[in-house]
Image (cartoon, rainbow, N blue to C red):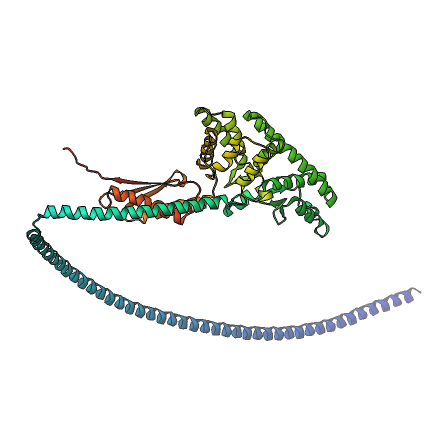
Length: 522
């Protein structure tokens, strides 16, 4: 049994050894196969690497060739551009050299002409001097002949000649003066008639935006649409009732009311402001508010007229006239507020009448009513003087008032101290500097025209427009004009200003002739 076991163990051992040897042999063979396979793959990789390296080298050569080509092309372009620049520079140098030569020739030619002109001028001067000497010599000879023939000395003949010239000149001057005075009177009458024929207040077009519009502020631009209304019904109703133009444009938060009638414009402004506050903007409400505002304004102008009469201590004026006095606040003439002008005239007339021994209160009354017709010119039309006379006659005013209304425009003779005081006050109020406004541009233009008219006259050295254009001061050359000629020059300048220009009031022309003798004591 033991033997069998040992035999089985030996066999197993031998089998294991044999199996191990066989397995080792097989593993060695398989390893050799793996080595061969690895070597084959390495060769393949090496071949691929060589192929890639060859391709990369070829690509690099191709890129280098392209770069070299671009470099050559850029270099060639640069060389061509440089050649063009050099050629252009040479052309400019040639042109400049030609221009330089041309200018040098022209300068030489001009210099030669100038030299010839100077030579001719010198010859002319010498010739004129010679002619002057001949003239003086021949004049002396002629004078001697005349003295011998007439039996008069030179001084006596000169005195007689000047006397004759003076007589002839005096006649001509008198004729010219009479002619200019007649023309001045005719022109003055024409201008007066033109002023009296104005149907409405005269406003300068340059400042129409200042005198003819009111601006109403809006809280937001949505209100513009409500003011216009559906299919424009609201704005049509407003313009029909108020009698003004309503301008709705891109101006933010505002609309513009335009009218030459200050009274209607004030009513329109207040009506629209109340409509905006109320919020109900529709035709029926517009009519209601307009009627209410109109009544308020009628009451306010009456109250203002009554207050003015009380302050002036003037009693017995009819309520309708008091209402018209209040309405003068909404009337302007030449930019001057009519009510302010009326109050100023009334106060001035009262002071002047009191100083002259007249009745102060009556003068103030006439001053308050002298322009009362202006309150109705916008509504009725016509001349404010005629309207004023009609009103004063209707309400049985004092004869002094009836006289002052036409007299302050020179349409009737002054019949009393009080009327004279009103006329003087009206002239002072209208003509004082700053009373009647003008646009700066038109003001400066008028002053310039006045100075130019005076400066263009012969013998005038300087001319200055002074006192807001109401006086022009002219300084003349004393060596060229004498006193008589200076007086005549003043009339000529005044006449030309009247003919060529339109202006309010009068312009005083002052001609100054001054002769100075200056010496120094050492």
